[in-house]
Each structure stands twice: as structure tokens, then as C-alpha cells.
Length: 85
Image (cartoon, rainbow, N blue to C red; front, side, top):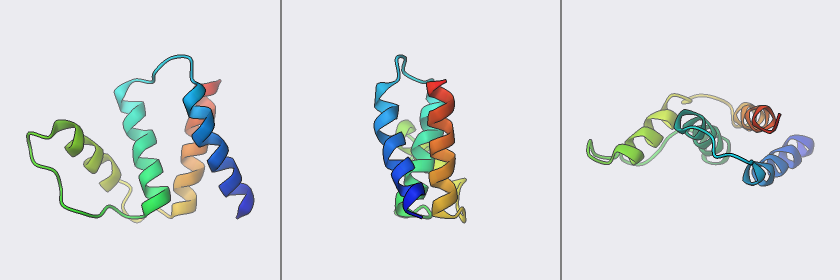
């Protein structure tokens, strides 16, 4: 368990060193994996229709409903590692 948490913390730092900003879809994936890994299933009120960014983030996170937090951490780590090449 500690290895996974250490790797997750490293990925959180590594993502900030990317040479190019990822596309919006990739950013949403990273966001949703992060939220699922740290907060668990989606919570709070769904943003209104005109809050496009907030709504997109909420819906991306909502798609991961039921995913284990450790699995979300691993998916975040894998995604960052692919981005780093």
C-alpha cells in the first residue's frame, strides 16, 4: 500500500514537469482519476448547465463511480507515465 501511495505522490509531482500541456480530454482523465483516488465517489451538487468546465469535471469524475481508490491511483500513475514517455 505504501508503494502505491509513494508512486502516486511521485506522479503528482511528475505531472507538473510535462514539457507540453496535455489536451483537454487527457486533463479531464487526470482530474477524474485524482478526485476518485483522493475523495472516492463523486459528491456534491452537479454544476449547472452553463458551468461548462465544472460540469465536464463533475461528469468525468462521475463516470468513475464505484472505482476503488487504489485502482484510480494506479490509473493516474499509468497515465502520467505514458505522458512522460
